[in-house]
Length: 258
Image (cartoon, rainbow, N blue to C red; front, side, top):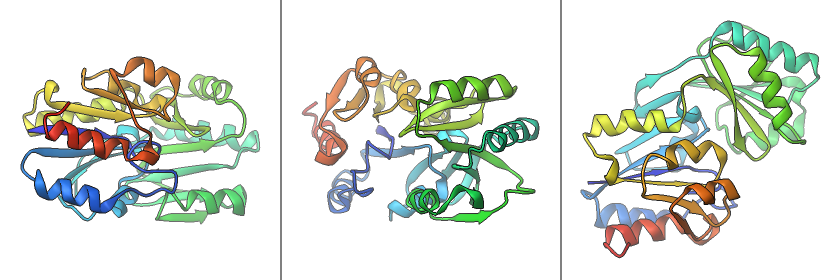
């Protein structure tokens, strides 16, 4: 049994935020008993589920903070309240309102963020709620978007956090997640559930938040549109997300052509 772990934005999804559903459904029909799919993303699980009709998929959301299978949350890590308050206070003091706070079920955006940011985020959060972000419990992730380089913001946020960490999630965004949690940690948990070996794992990614999971196996694939660090870590480079790179490579693997 082969296990495919795929990032979504910039990897499985094309530039129009979709994928070739007929192609995937054909693979799922022809090779139904030969592979499992793990969807590993910084997006929330509720949003990830909107892309697939199939039930037999493991979803890793919020960069590893939550794992779902067949409508059941099988693992989750919430952010510490102290860290949340420190981060949100810092962002508001710096007049940075372009951020989204996610729980297992819903995502929330500050009403001060502006219409343009809110409209853009609705592409990635199907359950986005606009409010003043007071009294939200069970937060799994905070995503911040800035127009400048994320390095300085990450340093500032990591200095504030104790049990959480700021990570580069690509597309000029920073994610605040629980320390010690990433896509790779969550994938290991799923592999244990499946009783699968790491040599049966095939990983696909394009951004910095995919690096840990790409390091899990030699069967690692960087997208042609991925950043240079990801390409240097992955064993293979495959066609871009706009060229069905993941699906065509999956098919080659299942046909034993790769």
